Length: 179
Image (cartoon, rainbow, N blue to C red; front, top):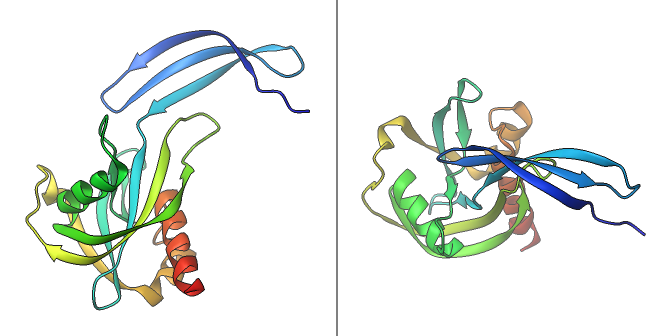
């Protein structure tokens, strides 16, 4: 029978605005002592957004960590005590300037479970009402509308290449095909 690792000690080595890093000393199933580096990050929402013309609304933004512009679905952190559905509404208003009147849960997943705590709640949003962009850095985000039938090609070509967008869009396509 599988046994979880036992944490023997924890040392926080970094505390930043978005992440913290700790090193855990653990005892594995065979009794051997080793270390695990853990990146702690708040849970997030990732949203496949569809307009009335059957376009998926994506955002293009520069990602410093990889040094390039990426085409992604709207997403963002869940504030402490915030309900994930409320986070969806806030993030869509911040990133694309729309308020969704319909939000359906698609599922969820751990982004980097080998070394990170972040869990992504995936949603599908429709019935959009235009609103104003409320975020401070909206000038660095470009809204891109893509016909939904082009999503598989954009994923396969690598144009959409971040894990949360690929996973959430594939969940969206599976749910849509099942209906």
